[in-house]
Image 1: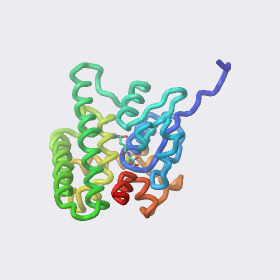
Image 2: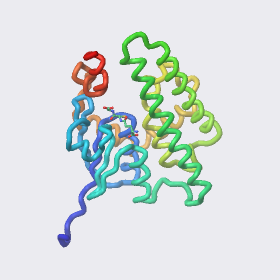
Image 3: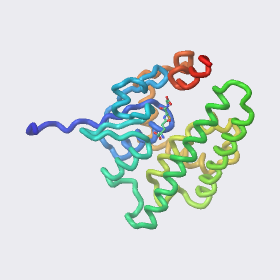
Image 4: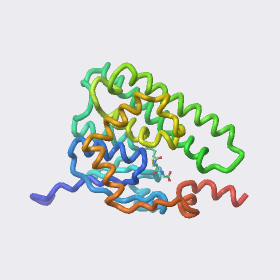
Length: 236
Ligand SMILES: N[C@@H](CCC(=O)N[C@@H](CS)C(=O)NCC(=O)O)C(=O)O
């Protein structure tokens, strides 16, 4: 092992979209040094063999910390919180059970249903009424659970922490997922979104999107890269 070797910076494979931004927020909040590796999913960077060696699932975010590779935003949040010990609730079974429950609600409910709601509302070809109805309903159902909790307490757990940061990633895009009037039914989610967005760490995350260039248009190339499975339809 080389003597006096500088520790390597954590590398965050990043696109400014809901799952990567939560990880960037955690890194910023904990003042963990890291560097951004632009992974432009609209250009297909998620499908390169180099990226697949880090995240076989071919999606952002992914993180490399020395010889450790982690993929999936929630896995990364848990990895980093174990590493830093910050923004976690008390290390009691009760507090950790509560944390895991809400973290997984975001990971398995909010994220996937919002993602599919956006897909069917904004990208899928007609007829799509059945799918739009299903995913809009489920996205709303999950957000109303979060709203109900935040109507009774300032944060998802006792103090601001990793669950709130995970919620923030998706709350930023609620109008695109649920429609422009969504905030009328989600005032407490909006309160949390605004509070977190005003934090210096969140502003640093927003600045990443401006510091690096990401493809802004969604053209044919982007659609091929984001939804490669649709190519199958053309061949049949
Ligand atoms: N469960 C994964 C989902 C990751 C995910 O869907 N990432 C999106 C950005 S929010 C992505 O990379 N999309 C590009 C693609 O699907 O090709 C996580 O939480 O990290």
